Amino acid sequence: MEDRSRTKRRSHKRKKKSVGRIVFFIFSIIFMFLTTIGSYFVWQAYRDVRTTTDEMYEEVEAQEQHSSRQDRPVVVDDGEDPFSVLIMGVDTGEYGRIETGRTDTMMVLTVNPNTNQTSIVSIPRDTYTEIIGRGEKDKINHAYAFGGTAMAVNTVQNLFDIPIDYYVSVNMESMQQIVDAVGGITVVPPITFSQAGYQFNEGQPVSMGGAQALEYSRMRYNDPDGDYGRQHRQRQVIEGTMSSIASFDSLRNYRSILESLSTNMKTNMSFDDMFDMFNNYRGSVSNVEQLQLSGHGQMQNGVYYEMIPDEELTRVREHLNGELELN
Image (spheres, rainbow, N blue to C red):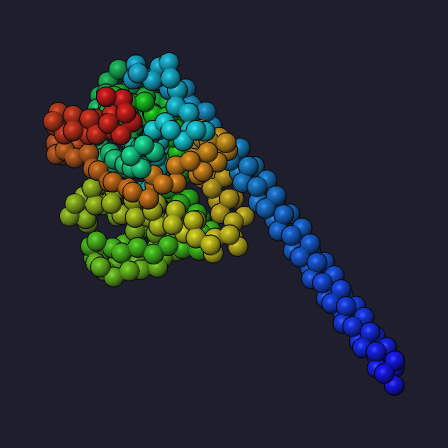
């Protein structure tokens, strides 16, 4: 009896070991399967992102304006150099326009990893300044219409006496596609107004799709702050879009996001540049300071311009030069 009991116990142990091995084997197979699927997804996403950035990439021949950078181009792969980006919102569809387009949104972004500071300077679209390459003064948003990205970059470099290391241009008419691709955005209107059948109430958060976001960012003539008010709302749309892109939910729809970006955005940032910026400068973008280049409206030969006082221009120039460590 005792021998049979021992035999049963040994048999029971072998069964337990066999069941344990089977369970372990099954979990191993599932783990390897999930790992393979995950690796494939990561590889596929990497390939899609790289393809998209290649499609967006467009070099620009800009004249270097600041002597201290002529022999030392910015390097982002070590995460030590401050750099600048000109962000342009190009609108060809507003008010029935059919021409090349004008930069109705112009912002200079500087990122300094040594101070963990990001600065955004908004430029009024009607700023009266020298258009580099034409030998005359005009509204700064005409530079893009006259000479594309290169003329716009050179004009901004001359205005602030800084180098523009990178640029990003976005077709504002197609901005609604990008907003829809990220699943919409939420903003808090600073004023109450209606536009194209949409109602916006001051202080009340509103979730909006692409078409609504485009109209929200376009309204200018009924804003008591005029173009300055519109620039503020445009910044809200851009910030809201970037927040949605950075959210976990956007991963499920990343292909649509990449598709909308590839057809509506141009930049001279390579994939490697973007990768290095993401890895090396993340701490700097958590501390954002916003500045507004301000002036006063003035009619000249029947045309409205925004005149920037010398002291205001000096203030912004010194700030940007400090952020880029050019002083």
